[in-house]
Amino acid sequence: MKDQLYKHLRILQELGYEYLFMEKDMNLTEEKEKKLKEIGRAIQECKKCDLYKSRKQAVLGEGNPDSSLVFIGEAPGGDEDKLGRPFVGRAGKLLTKLIEAAGHKREEFYITNICKCRPPNNRTPTPWEMEACFPYLEKQLQIIQPKVLCLLGATAARAFLKRNVAITKERGSIINWEGKLLYLTYHPAYVLRNPDAEITLFEDIKKAIELAIEK
Ligand code: URA
Ligand code: SF4
Image 1 (tube, helix red, strand yellow):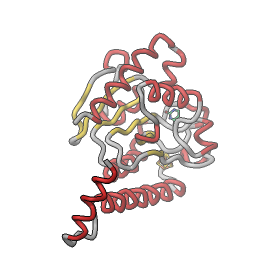
Image 2 (cartoon, helix red, strand yellow):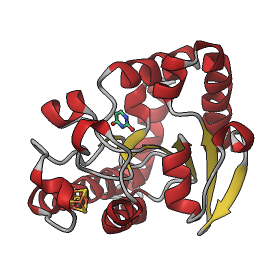
Image 3 (cartoon, helix red, strand yellow):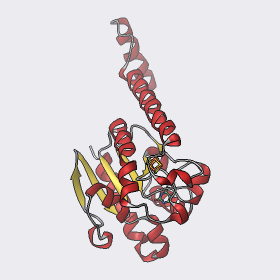
Image 4 (cartoon, rainbow, N blue to C red):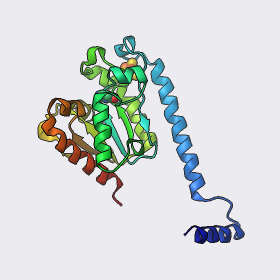
């Protein structure tokens, strides 16, 4: 297999090809990383809503900038605020476990939140806080260009649909949004409080992944 590949590459080289698409893709990925980092710098200084007052740090998100699937939660909690990474506390560990149970790694995807700063006492972000922060998420999505957004919990769904969402009724729905597919499911923190819902969240995560990576 490898020998054959080298043979083909040598033929291409003799024909005068100097670059392969792989190299171009790498540059594109690096470019995306750079643009995402710029947003990361902007949010650390952001004072658009009052959440800046109590945060230790804003949390941009992390993962594969080329992912066809982005997981979107509500806002950082205490662990995320401390570590500067999304979904690393108890809810995050459950999300990571379910992605792995579906045969994948969290690094394959991109993971972020509607609000980039932790609300005091982990309260739900207000509609104004979500609106103020949403343009950062929109910029992230413009850069990453995913196919599917897996919305974790009612708050994330509300932020996109601009209406109230009863997540127990609407989970599993797939909705078209600006050329992408929204996949609505439970928040892992809800599943920690309602363990019977774990199997449903797992099935939803599996379906969202299949939807994103199907050919
Ligand atoms: N809950 C969220 O909604 N987001 C996180 O990053 C962690 C917990
Ligand atoms: Fe800015 Fe968003 Fe943080 Fe509010 S939550 S201060 S809008 S980065």
